[in-house]
Length: 356
Image (cartoon, rainbow, N blue to C red; front, side, top):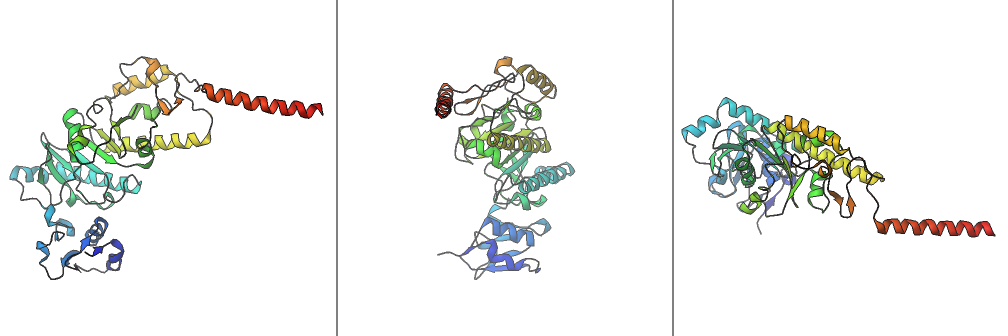
């Protein structure tokens, strides 16, 4: 059986200043263990083998980080190297790193989950690598691919889910940056039959609006990437069924904002549902005012061509309808009948007690 090395096995290396770690020749390092070693600036050598010949070996990259040789890209073409190392590219990489760290700190991603992309040219896109924690990203981790997903530059291997981002960018030229994550409250809606309700908080209506849900497909596949095509023109936030959330915008900071907005909103809805009572909804004409504002900001919304009565139509939970114009959801016939039976039972008991 091959040896599996985890972060726990490497804890003794923290802060020691070691430059190399010798592992058994058959060892497998977990992604978290690799991230830990990279953060400590430690190279991996495999006992009895030349490190560069081992499939899980690592080699130094700029800044003291270590990456898999299997992920390394051949020397990029001069024009790609120039763009990849340009001042504008470096600034965008810094933004991506900042967003990655914020995703991790807010617990929107775990392990090596989530990915970020920014379109930097007509056919060039910067993206995060595979198998690297977003909480430990560095500028040297960023890759560059073309619009078909072929890697053009970068010492790390690009994420397999970049195709999802590229489909959005192809279908909607306004999509210059995408952020994919697994924020818990929004993802909870992605794994249930519940719909994210509308018309309750103005900021949600303006920045995100109605949230679409794409059907499930295996992540990293072409079929998975194509699931979002019906939604990416009229929505900037899409729930990926049984998976997570993807947002897009004209820059990576705004795409990240939408991720925060949708998860905070879903969290509020979940908390409110525990409080009990009825949700209150903004009147349709007031939602119309917000849609006019939103259109002026050049943000997409699937409701621009709808009648006001349809602005808020959805079901939060199966059988629980969302009413617009501030009306409270009407109770179903079955629940009304049950309530009447309870009231009648209590009344009968009171009358019997008074008659004694």
